[in-house]
Structures are given as C-alpha cells and as structure tokens.
Image (cartoon, rainbow, N blue to C red; front, side, top):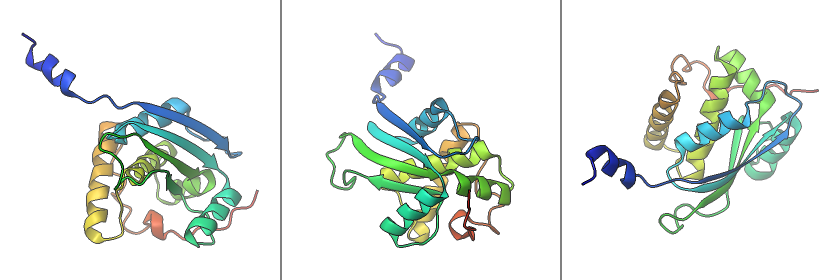
Length: 179
C-alpha cells in the first residue's frame, strides 16, 4: 500500500514546459534561461509552450503601439495563442511573453528593487496573463497580485508590492530610452 506522501506525489498533475528564449536586447543584465524556466514553471498551472522574448526599447514601444495603441515601451506584454477561456481542460497553453529590458531596468532602479526580483515578478505576471488572469477590476487585480506574491515567495522573493504604492509599475512615467 502506498504511503500518504507517495499517494500525494502521484496525484500531482505533471506540467510540461517547452520554453524558447529570444534575446533581442543589447542589455548585459538579462536573466539566464534556467532562471526564466524556473519562474515560468512556478506560475504555470498547466502544460505550455511559451516563448520569452527580451527586447530593447524600440521593439517594446513598437509592439505596445501596434497591439495596445500605447506609444511607449512597457515592461511586459503577453500574447496568448489559444483562448484560455475556451481551451479544452488540460490542453496545452501557447503564447509569448515580451520583456522590455531597458524599461525593467529603469523600473527596478526607480523602485529600489533588485533587478533579478523585478524580472522574476514580471515573468510571473506574464505567465499569469497567459492563463487568463487579469487586473482590469479591483477584485481581479487583488486576486492576481496575491497569486504573484505567493508564487514569488515560493521562489524566495519578497512581496513586489511592498513600498510600491508611490511608483506602481503600470503608472510609471517611462522616458524614451535611446541607445
């Protein structure tokens, strides 16, 4: 008869991850593939094929303008290639997460955060968006933020929202960064 620990372990659904990393930035301070993989897996609730693309300001700005109508580079963009609300239960998730290195670096410095912690937070944030989480309403935002806090704590990072009340990532004035 299996022990309780073995029974619990066998009941855990295996989440497989196909991760592609694209580095399209000149930044010297980008996370390693193994770090990104660990952060993505920590936030995943189902199997997925995800591309993480790290870009410079020009590409981040162009993508944000094209897909959101905003004429500035933003820290993270998420593109879902299957509708998570209509996907088959247990079906693989497919999407892209675009991280803008100069914006992330600027935000981390402005908010007094370690760069690696900010990259981890925004990676987790993007993975949650891929799975259908959002922050359009106060209730949704609170639930998503709590999940981010919990996932990041499991990875050994502090609450990213502590001390961020004066400089919230989505409200930060982003300067135009030029090479």
